[in-house]
Image 1 (tube, rainbow, N blue to C red):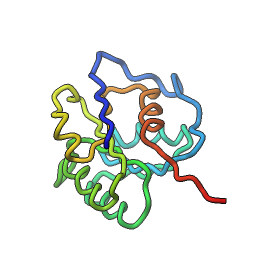
Image 2: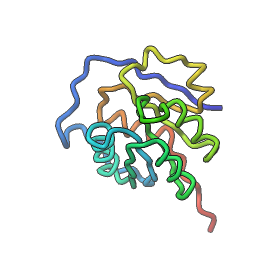
Image 3: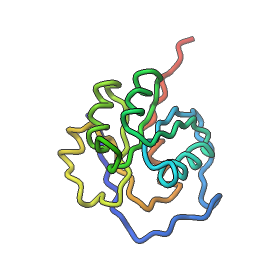
Length: 151
């Protein structure tokens, strides 16, 4: 069962670089970020990399699906407004390619999202824009479940 938490948008100002940055995650995640590489992608990737994660940024959802088929990813962040197919469709297709993959939708319109649709499309969390760096760490901590290695 997917866990859904909606973060209601608030009047927040993004923090300057380095402020409020949480400690490195104890187990790095392989994270795929789909969105504008000059906005969502770059900022999110920089924050995730500073937290110790391995990040791939793609601006096209069809490239993301190809990447998911070729390489393992622990988590997918996507904007709703992506070329050719929406973030909704990417989330749904990602579940076909990688069942159980946590998908985080990043949007300014979190309050307007239909919760049953989120669940049906395989969305695990919603991250409201603008977001704080600490919120990114919380989302990763809540969704990244590293596989234990047998000795």
